[in-house]
Each structure stands twice: as structure tokens, then as C-alpha cells.
Image (cartoon, rainbow, N blue to C red; front, side, top):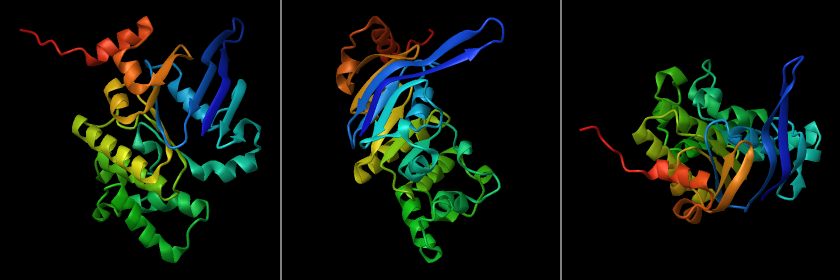
Length: 259
């Protein structure tokens, strides 16, 4: 499904003393079709940049990205835009996807209308079906984002992408801005929807417990590079590198309370 080879994104900063930042540096990655693949590591390690490269929301410095046999690094703008509905992303903050000026129902249907994939007479049925799948009460869809909770907004984002029936979903820290109880509910929801629709998911999180719950395989990033990857259970139970062992120890260490 996704095959990334020697992918890099470098930035330069400064006018006189130019500095090179290797946000993503020679990454190789293969994600099987229909699987949930985890990407983890500390903040700033390059996870989000890699996600944006895979979707060609930013241009790579070097390397190739192949999705379903198509080398999207070679596609022109028009050809790439035809594929956009099939490749969707959930951002950390649902405000990124929802307009404050639109009721939820219009934000949910917006991409389907934009890509002219729906007839007006079919909109109500599609809206109802996608809200049901996202477990968003239809009684809320006439409200605006500021009138509902963060979890309900994230469900609206999920309903929005479901209207397009994507083949690839990238979830970039989709629960980190939510309360703990709501985080668990959204993770359960995403896992259930992925199994039902069998799309490929790249799940990005610094939370190794969420990675362990969601993912079949996982890759660990550090300083723009993938330093370890494999079956999720194997990496989390017996990490090979000192850095990964430290991440796992910190994630699953029992709480120590002050006496």
C-alpha cells in the first residue's frame, strides 16, 4: 500500500550562517495494505513531517513515495488532486478541519460537495450514515464547533472523512487534545471503523499505550530517522535499541506517588 524509499525533507534557516535541519532523513518504510501501522517517537522527531510528505502536503527534498502502485512524487498537481479524496488525515486539533462559521453538518458534507461526489437528494442519507458510524448524535449536527465538546468535534471530523470512504487514513495524534475518557472512546471508534472498512491507517502518537492498542506494526523515529521497526508486540515487549528501551520503560513504568 505505502512504500517510502530514501525519503528526506531538509530545511535551511538563516541568511549569513545557514543551518541545515534534517526533519526527515533517508526514511524507508513499507505499510501493508489494510493494516494499522504506528509511528512513534518524541516531539520534534519528524513524525508529522513524514505524514505530510506521504500525502504530498509538503514536497520532499529527495526520495520516493508509492501508494497503491502509484509514485505520487512524480504526479502533477491535477493528477494528485484527483487522488486527494482517497488519502485523508485527522489532525490533533479538530479545529483544523472544522470551520467555526459552519454548522457541523455543513463541515461534514463539505469535502463530498467539493469533489462533486454527491447528489443533493442523497446528502441527508449520507450524513445520517456517517454520523452513525462516527457515533455523533444527529441532534448535534446543526450546532457550531464552539457549541459542542472536543470529543464531539473529533467525531464530526471522523464523520467528515467517512463521507469520502478513503483508502488511506493518517491519524496524527488524534486524541492528544482530548480528556482521558474521551481518548479511549475515540481510539475504540477508530479501531472499529478501520476493521469495518479495511482502509490502511498510519497512526501517529507519542503514547505507546495507544500505539500498542491500535497498531499491527510500529516504527520508532529519532532525529528524522527510523531507528527501529517491527511487529508492535515485539518492539514494545523487547525493544532492541537503548533509546527504544528507554521510551518503553518510561511509557509503562508504574506510577510512584509521593508519600
